[in-house]
Length: 314
Figure 1 (cartoon, helix red, strand yellow):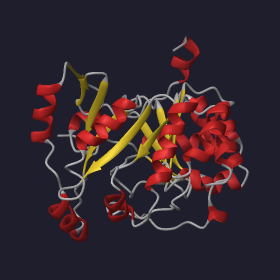
Figure 2 (spheres, rainbow, N blue to C red; figure 1 turned 120 degrees about the horizontal axis):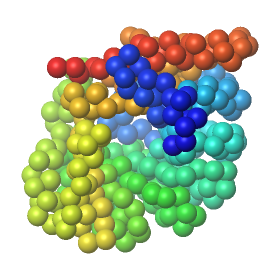
Figure 3 (cartoon, rainbow, N blue to C red; figure 1 turned 90 degrees about the horizontal axis):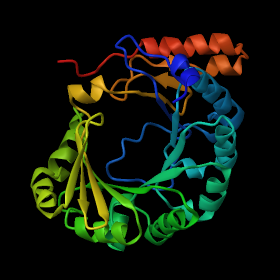
């Protein structure tokens, strides 16, 4: 980082710098996963436009944000996704990534790479067609797999697979997915099902939650090297042969909050200071659409940052 970038970097009240911004650019999706929380459906004509996203990103750049991740819903469902990436790339962020389900990735991977996308995470929970339909309610396994391989082929790097493990559904497929990932130079992230206080979600979790502890013990025996990501909840990365598996657990500890450097923007254009809260959102897109000057928009952005506080602080 050069001196100018360091000087521009903004910290919240807890001395946590804002380094990355995650923008949900749609909550529309082309699959319906079992574990998805379905945060409503925003009509496409109400979504942020590429120019509106660009204005928000310019502010982010001015306060020292270095990394941008686009998510959804399914971000590739937007027909202007390549334009969004191209505009983002013009601002010279250090890292631009997308989280996708991979279904449309074969179609867009080359154009996205050419537009400036650096890497992609693909939510992909199984290699079994029947299980894929059970999880997603759709028959797009072939397309998702082809999209993943196309992303590797065009040079998006690293390509990561996000595999949510569910008891009795795909918990017996870890090594199959690891071998597929290893063969194709992909990093596999195994994700523990997130618990919720919502009664309906809790019943789902009780039925399908898969304990990762025994699996981690096995991985430790197989690994030639284990790396702990200190500033990412102490996540463990297991290096087995020429492959890599990372364990991702729910974000329910003080260390995660202490080291959180991410801000979020919702599909509705609101600043979301904390992943685990919805009661302190700050409306930004309304002011963007009303044509407020950049300095005033920046102050709204800073107000959102000042709303940040550790969710777990014990």
